[in-house]
Image (cartoon, one colour):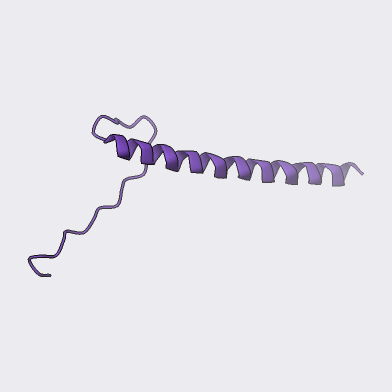
Length: 63
């Protein structure tokens, strides 16, 4: 490692519910909002898929 190498970048910590947000910049807060919105979309898609499977199974066993 030479004198001009940049220090390794630290991975951002995952968001934790209830975490103190005072130390985060506006850009960091916006990034977390974006990531959480993407996760919400993913979770809702999983719920829709599981609901469809449940309805299909329910229909199959009622016949």
